[in-house]
Each structure stands twice: as structure tokens, then as C-alpha cells.
Length: 284
Image (cartoon, rainbow, N blue to C red; front, top):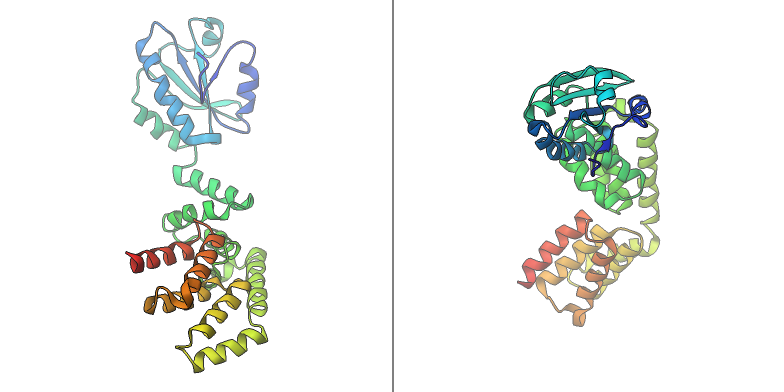
């Protein structure tokens, strides 16, 4: 009964699968076609295995077809499940059980769903999928009590998606014991961004903008300069302030520059999402 999210256990592969429990725990389900209870629980077990992903291997042993193996494992009741780790059975249950009871048994030995999600999020960061990882990390932060490593990964996502103010804010929350080499690397990246984003041209435009806050042409040029040195949040704030007063400022150029910045930031960027909502409220 080979199916998705499970492997059929037989004489040819059982030794290999048991040995694989050194790396990944193996949950063996002993079943037979004549035992309706053992047959009906298989889809739920496969769904449970899917939820655990790479954290567990589900192996199905048809005791009717593999009587020798069933005897070798000492199976006396169907259904029976056994969890193997490091080549040894560490837990198990005999007779019909609810999927909730099975999940409770597994929870003693396997990572929680939150831990699995966190591992997935960390992997996404390693693969450079920052926009996909960020909402997962933010959702898990409270569950893990503001864990410093999660905050560092969030800061990395913010930096790589050019949300520098948010990155600086969360880095300021990192406790001394978590200020490792990764923390220092992220702080250095932020410092480089600040240095690159404070050119003489920008300083001159900032002075003009402060002196003439209602000068739309100066404000637009400053926003463009900000965007060119990855200071998108400041650029969008200036552009939004202009659009609040005039949606068609500079013959629509202000709106075009804003849309170009939003497009470059992408759908998953938190700054872009906030700005899109503000723009939508202005338009509608």
C-alpha cells in the first residue's frame, strides 16, 4: 500500500529503514486488510506525517503480506504503532487509537509544529527567500518568548528587503548574550547603508526641503535621491505627504515614482504593504 507521505516496509528495505532512524525517527504502522481499524487510520497517519515533514518517516507494514517481519517485531495486536529512534523502539501503542492520542505520543519525541515552522523559516533565510521567511518569523517571535536568534533572522530579512528602520529597531532589542558575530555583521551592514545614504547632494536637498517644505519639486527630487540609496521608507513618506495634498502632483509624476518604488520593493515587503494601504485609502 505504497502512498504519498509513507513508505511500504518489506523484507528488502526494513533494515535500511530501521537504520535510517539514526538520522530521522521512523514511525511504523502495523496493519492488515482484514483489520478495518488498522486500515482506516492510515490516511490520518499520512496527513500527520506530512505535517511533520522531514522530522519523521512513516513506514507501513502489511502484516498479512509480511508475516515474517510482523513476527520478528513481536506484533500481537492490530493496529500497532512503534516509534524507532537510533535503531531502537522508544515508544509505541497497541490496539485502536485516535489520531490525537498518536499525536500526543509523538509530541514527546518530535519537534513541535512551531519548532518545525521555525526551522523552515531559518532555511528560507539561508536560501535568500527573505520575503517569504519574514512573516513566519514575526508570527513565531512571541511563541518563543522574543528569542534573540529569531530577532537576528528578522533583522537580516529587514536589511535584505531594505526595511532599514525596522532592522535598526529590532537590533536595538538584542540582548548582550545574543550579540554574536551575526549581530555584528548586521550592525555593520546598517552602518554602511547609513554612510552610503548620506551624500552631499542629499544633505543639500534636505536643507532645501526643510527650508521650503511646500516645494513639491524639491521634495520629489529628495525622494528620488533617497530611493537611489535604498532609503525607500523615507522616500515613500515624502511622496505620501505630497499625495495627501494633491493626488496628481507634478502631473502624476509623484504617483509614478511611488509606484516604481513599491514595485521594486515587492509584494512581501512590510514598508510597501503599509504604503499601499495608505495609498488605497487616498484613492478610494
